[in-house]
Every structure is written in structure tokens, then in C-alpha cells.
Image 1 (cartoon, one colour):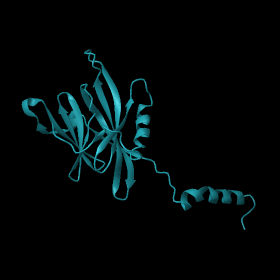
Image 2 (cartoon, helix red, strand yellow):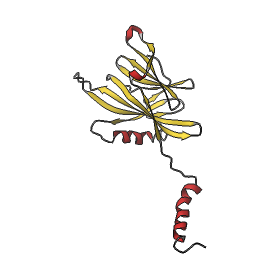
Image 3 (cartoon, one colour):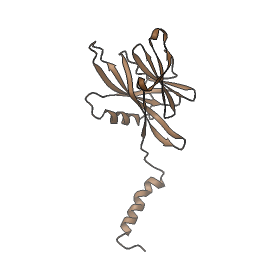
Image 4 (cartoon, one colour):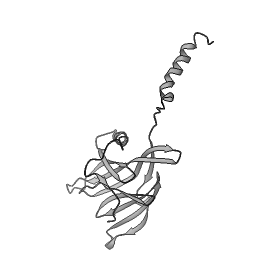
Length: 189
């Protein structure tokens, strides 16, 4: 029998661990995998007619090959996985550029890292003609069939914008995407 002074500690340790292990409830922390989409870190795949943009391959991360499409001073991403192409498009009228990093959010599995969401910084022209830039983080849900924008986080004046975007990314797959935000198979510009 254990001494009286260790019995409460042993009992507490057993009871405190019981709910998490016996009931199969474990708290997994989502992780991040980053990839640069800076033009200097990518290589040209295709140049559009009249030199009006093109497609660059920025490498692979989280099981996706990432292409950056630059067309008419607007950028979007194409994520390629097993022949599927998912488009992540800010779909705003302003001139945009993306990056310099893409953040995939997900979990380590026995098969490798499995991403459920993507976060990318969108630099937007503010539309005033002054060249002033706004920055917002686009958060997209990555499903088997599509990428879908689930929200935007303003970076200006928000010192917690990265954490806010990660918190929003954790809601991916817990809801249906709002109408008009689903982005199915990618189309070339």
C-alpha cells in the first residue's frame, strides 16, 4: 500500500488522465507548414499572351504543388494534388499581390501532414489611386473537391491578425461555405 501522502497524488493523477485517455479525447494542436510564393522563389511555367502575366511554380508543401497565377495585376493560387486543381482567388476588384508566404494549417498523420486550411496575405490597392496598400489575410477551407474562402482578417491595426487567422482556420470543415465563396476546379486565365 502507498504511503498516505502519495495516495492523493496517485488518485489525482489517475483521475485527471482518465477522461483524456479512457474516452479517446485528445487535444491535437494544429500545425503550420509554410511556402514562399515570392516571385524570386518560383520559376515560370507559362507566360500569357502579350506578356500580360503568367503562371509560376512555387514548389510543394503540405501535399500540394503551388502555382501562382498573375493576370491583369491580380494574383491567385492554384493548388495541385493528385490531378486535382483547387483555386484560391481573392476575387476582389482591386489590384492584388499575394504573399510572400502561404501558410497551410493542418495535422501530422501517419501518412504525413494533412492540411485543412490555407492562409495567405493579400496586398490590395486601396482603390484611391494613391498607391496606398491594404493588407488582409484570406483564410480558405481546403476540402477534397474545392477551396473555399471562409473569411478575411484585417491586418492593419490588429496586432493579433495572424493568431486571428489561425483561429478562423480551425473552423474549417465545421460549416458549409457561404454561397458564392466556393472555388472549384481551377481555370487558367
